[in-house]
Each structure stands twice: as structure tokens, then as C-alpha cells.
Length: 598
Image (cartoon, rainbow, N blue to C red; front, side, top):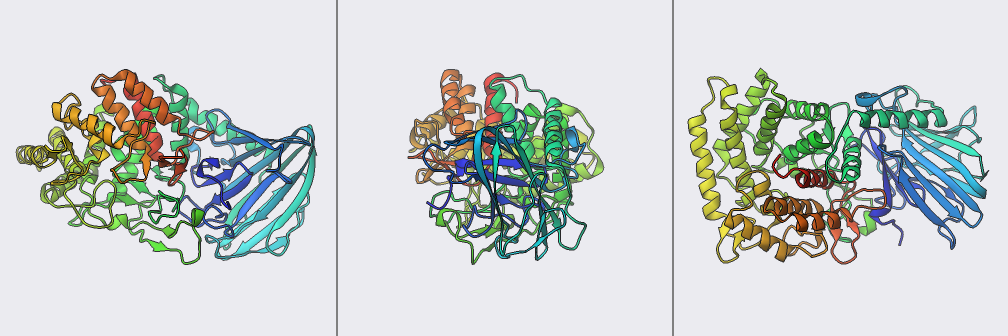
């Protein structure tokens, strides 16, 4: 097998970009400009697309054992390699700007990858194999030896400088390969610093002091965030992961760090998740409020409002780039093999072109939540956004769309989409006193009630005994679990309770996983956490607790969730780390803490 399991990767972040480092010591994914930029290390998607391996020589042989963990409340990862010759620790991080603290983290990140080797016992021979391949593996750089013993790699729009605080480095034809020994007490630091080719030079930072400063930056950030509910350690770690997926310059949260990790090995449902989705907005805002602080929630909301701009005749897209870019047209790579030969590899995401009726509901629920919790007045632009989104729903709610799972076949009348239209009109009515003379709560109330009656009539399938995925369909869909979460029906309603029971019986696995639909090849972690919330809401706390523990157990050894889990092997599938999986955990933990408070 020429690829690591998805769960073998740890996540590094500087709130500008992110990297994945494997248990074998190889950094196989790093897009240094920003999360949705071009990779300089892309072996995750093709063996020849670049990597930087720092590990004991011959690691993987008998007698080699790996332990790893994050420094508490940080994304600074410490990996200990135990070998027959001794033990070494490698600490990896993406550098914070020197002196940055708390909410300054990521605003001016220097784009420097830090790696520090410490000898713990014995004498261990190490290898550093630095093989960048910029532009997602399309380019092989020239390597230039520099005064002072560093190596400068240049190709296309990318410069990378590899430096060490203890070694003289030399470049070869296509890589900088170095072997060295460390004994107990020795320390060798490395930095790989990125800069655009036609800009200022890469930053030069001391590995040891910058690593200590980066730890301090993360710790100061988490000190401003308090959570005292159930499953505190799990929630706090998930909040750290969400912070790592945040693009600090705008406040947007990427859905995941990666593109094209498959939902099924060898399959073609491989999409680019390095953007920010509005559909997830209300549940993400709720998680930030629970586990983080109002600052992140407010910044995320400001980003969304600016990204949407003035609402026009075209539907608001379901996703945007991290700085609010609207056109993120999709293309397929003609040269990357894909993770585990799962093609195609996609860059961009054409879901932005789809009609997604649930977007206004997520946004208006978020507006209502912020006003309810913070009490801030609505400024003129926010009033315009709320009015525009409300009228979009009033105009379009009766149309079919592509649904929550962003199907790429035909538009349908998806139940969850119609329910989010109801949410939009319900929140618009509640917000009407703040919206001025153009508010029309009487008309909006009538539309809200019409939507509700339509869902109850067309979404319920008497033969199945549940709300199904789309009007007139007999196919179950786990998105029905979202109905009580957003307040459309109480979980105790006989139809809703029946739906919860049918979904758990027919789409659940008994092992803590819930599929989205019957033919879904994997469990979708967010759906498992929705089921936890539903069980709490119907008073089944013990069952909810058991399910929560099982679902949380699908995190990898350093607490990271991907999007999905293989039903047979328990292996992680899909893009990673997946924001919605961590959002689901936070919200479910809070529901278990306080069932009465959203």
C-alpha cells in the first residue's frame, strides 16, 4: 500500500493554512499560501506530488513504535519514535507570528513549517527528505545552496527555504536529502519557509524559540475560551480543530483542510472541501458560541454578510472562498492519481452553482441567534440582507433544489430544504420588529404556515412511517434528524418520534454510525451526532450517552474526525479534518449538558 490511512495523519495549522503529517514523519499536504491554495507537498493525492519526511532511518522495521499527542489546547504535535537504537521526539507546528497572542493568531502568519528533533535515549540515525513539488505536483523546483547552509527551492510562483539550526544542508537535483544522528539530549531544528517567488524573501525564524512562542500563542488563545459542560476535553479539542480550520484574516471556517479524499476507496465522490459553506452556518455558529467565544461567532457572521453582498435575483450560493470569492469553478486534475487511486481529483467546487433553498434559513437562524444572545442592533446592511434573503425564500420555496447532500443528478423537493425555508420565514417574522417599514410579517407568517403544511402533507410517508428525504419518495434520509434540532417539530411529536426510530433502525449500524441513506457506503459522523441530540430530546439520555461515546470513538489517536467512517473496517473516509464532524460533537455534548438550551 503506497498511502497512509487517513487516520494516520495529524493536523497542523496557523489559521492561514494547514498541513498533514503522517505517523511515518512525512508531511504529505501543505498549501502554504492559504488553505484553498496550491500544495507544495501533495503526496496525499499522488506519490510523486511532494513531501517532507523527517523520521528515523529505516522506520517501519520491526521494533519501531510510534506515540504521538498534541500539546494540550494546541495544534503543536509531538511524535515519539521508539526504535531498537533509541528514542527520539519530533515536534511539528506551523509557526505563529512572533509575539501573536489570543485572537491575533493567524492574522499575519509567516507561512513557516517548524520541525524539531530531540534525542531521548540511545543513538538514532535520522533522515530528512525534503522534496517539494509546487502547484499540486506540477513543478519540480531548482534547489540552490545558500550561504549559511540553507537550501532555496524555486519553481513557478513558489519559493521555499529549508534551514536548520544545527546542520549544513545541501540540495540535490530534485530534493534535499540529509542524514544525521541524535543522542539523548541533542536537539536539531528545521524550518521550511514559504514566500511568493516575486515577493519578499521567506521568513527566517529560530526553530526552538519560535516553537515555544507558537505554543504560547495557542495556549493564550484557548485561555479566552471557557467550556464547562459535559465531555470537556473532547469539546475543547474540537474547538481547537475548528480554530485551526479558521482563516483568521476573514473569520471564515473551511469545511476541511483537504480536497478529493474519497467517500469510498476507488470511488468518484471526491470533492474539494477547502471552502466555507453557508449551509452549515447556524450549527457552526452554535458550536462556536458553546465552545469558543462571541468573537469568533461575530467574525464568521461578518464574513458571511460581506460575502453575500446585496441579495439579487440569483440565489445566494451555498459556499464561498475564504475571502468571499463567489466563482470557485471546479476542474479535474489530469495528472494526479488520487488518494488510493480514487479519481478524479477536483479543485474548486461546482456546488456554488446549485440552487440550495436551505441557505437563507441557516443565515436567518444565525442572525436571530446572534441578536438573541448578544442583543446588538441590526445595521443597515444586515437589515438589507435579512429582507433580501426573506424575499428570496418567499419567491423560491416552492422550487426543487439539489438538497443538503448536494446531489449532482436532478433537482427534487427535499424535505430538509423545505424545512429550512420554514426556518427562514419563522425567523423573519421574529425579526420583523427590527427590520423597519419594509417588513411584512403578516405575509411572511402566511408563507411560513403554508410551507409547514406542505412539509407535513408531502414529506410524511405513511407506508414508511417516517419523514423521508424528498416529497413523494419512500427513501429514508438521515437529514430528517435535523427537523427537531431546528425546531420544526418537537422530537416528542408522534411523527417525529417514529421518524427517529425508523432512521435509527434502518440507517443506523448499532456501532455508533448512521448512514445518510440506505445505499450510503459509509457512516456520516454528523448524522450520528444529530441522532444523539434527537435521543436527548425524546428523553432517552442513556441511549444518547452510549451513542455519543461510540461516535466519538471514531476519532483518530490525536482526536481528529474525517467526514465519514467505513461501515466494515471503521476506517476514516472523506476529507479531513472535517469541521462538521467536530461541530456535531460539540453540539451533541452541549445537548447532553443542557437539553433545554440551544
